[in-house]
Length: 284
Ligand code: PMP
Image (tube, rainbow, N blue to C red; front, top):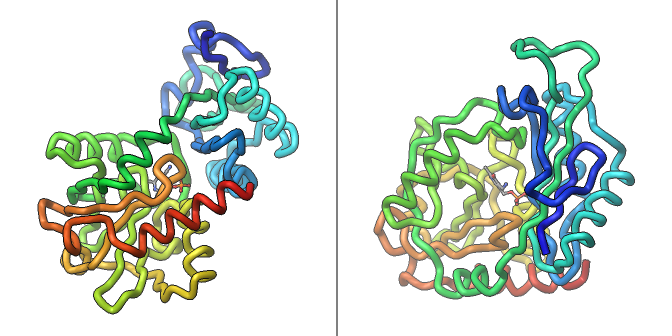
């Protein structure tokens, strides 16, 4: 069965699902997106994902293509038509199609596309069990990383550079030597004193939906948490290091720039958080 995508009002087989050649998403990366997990038929954290999309669009002065209730219906219909209960939903809103001109065209209608791709939870679970390597890369992005913009070139180049070093993720480092986030993840450490640390969201990183869920779960478990920046050196001396994102849940890092983290195996804190996150997903 071919995959079905939603494009501006129509549900189409993916091969026929196309946007206008002058769509500003295509020509200027003029848009915002969300990636949402479907786990066991449940759409995880849909409400905060919709809220973050609305905020990104408002910061970019792109009008929302429809209200949240209608958008929820469309998302559910895309999932239903793809007959899957483990998937990643990709939802993108661009400013729309118009004659190419940098300034906003008048009376432009936003363009909405939604795709749904099967997510391999077995592979994710295997990575959570084994842990992955990560490499530092300079953070060359713009100064509005709080917006989930579709303009991802620096993230792509950093991820590719990390992959070419045999790493799963690029850990982005600012000009002060402080870790910002991963190329598509938020980054966490556990200090030798046992405190969970992740960079604060008022510090120009993407406010990850999984990051918020993990903070809530850690607080429920009475884990000490600090939201602050940390250096590459502090990360290398951490007892644990891990990534969070909708697609990878909480992913242990066992080596950073080839230095082992802790004893070089996934640590107990991330394991407990993954367990609690699974319970949280089951309860949705
Ligand atoms: N930071 C960046 C740069 C990302 O692209 C993502 C995932 N889209 C995240 C963090 C994690 O966000 P979330 O938990 O909402 O998937």
